[in-house]
Amino acid sequence: MESMVKNNLDFWAGKRVLITGHTGFKGSWLMIWLSKLGAQIYGFSLEPDKNSKLFKYIFQSNYLTDNKVNHYIGDIRDKTELSKFVKESNPDVVFHLAAQPLVKKGYEDPLLTWETNLIGSLNLLDELKNINKSCAVIIVTTDKVYKNNNWIYGYRELDALGGYDPYSASKAALEIAVSSWRDSFCVNKEKISSNLKIATARAGNVIGGGDWANDRIVPDAIRSIIKKDSLLLRNPYSTRPWQHVLEPLWGYILLAKFLYVDGSTFSESFNFGPNISSNRPVKDVVEKIFDYWPGKYTIQKEQNTYHEAVRLNLNVDKAFQKLNWFPKMDFELTIQKTVRWYKDSYEGKSQIECCLEDINFYQNLIK
Image (tube, rainbow, N blue to C red; front, side, top):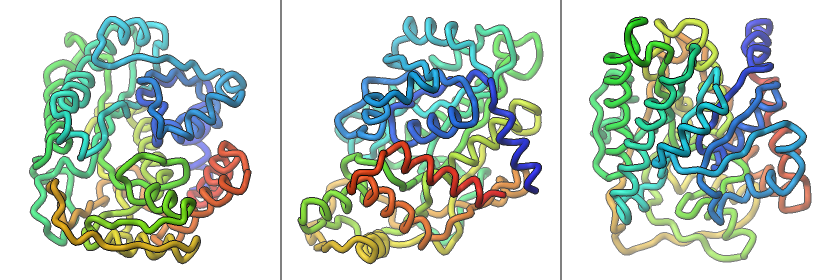
């Protein structure tokens, strides 16, 4: 098993990797991990917003220069700029994380959400067809692509897609569009995208150090601790599958490697979720955070304006059977490592050092 893990990690040395959305939370962690493994990173993203503090710290340090990370600002809706970058990067592997990722923002600006998540993603696939070599493409969607019946069972990759809100619907539509693109254009050498091996990855509610987005429970809780405020909980009893950010990223890394080697077997959709015991109400997450770093909360009494699912679980049997991927961190360890990152950073430790420590810890787990 250890030699298999080593082989999966050694694969990345010298690979040209394009990451869209590399300035975001998951993108920043993925960029650090893959550059540590020796990949040549090409990042394409919007300007980092005011909450992308992890990437801003990385940018202000010498990390990008020292690790020869190519950082490019652009919008995946702009096909001209995207075309230039795809040609320059000439990737072996693509991780497509660029998206409008917030449910609330989807309600506030639905057209932007649809244009970015669906049309922007299709722009990328259309440009990738022009590179003259085989390329593995991981399209990152979300656990919210499923038609949510609020049942206790984990959703499987063959379950019906849906989406109540604009964000979820745009990602479900992307799943359908990718499947159509793959079937229409990638099936044989005569097709326009025969060089592409495409898979979609579904995960959600990732937590970990460096996330400062608004309207997300962990950064909201950490801000309340630092400011000595009371955290306001909107939906304390909504249950979500909480997982550390490194868990799905390891799934993406594994899937990309297998996809690159054998596209015909792995050009499918895959769930990456935590153990069933990590499906916990929001209230449990906050109370566990406050066990490690004391704080306080109050529960919002007025009704929430936006629709949110009460329960959402994923079945990850397929990832285990085909990729030998399964979650390594339970709920307790996930919260512990997340809070430790924020505390260490708050007390002055380098944010990159905090990330690398967690990556090294996780690589020891997967051995």
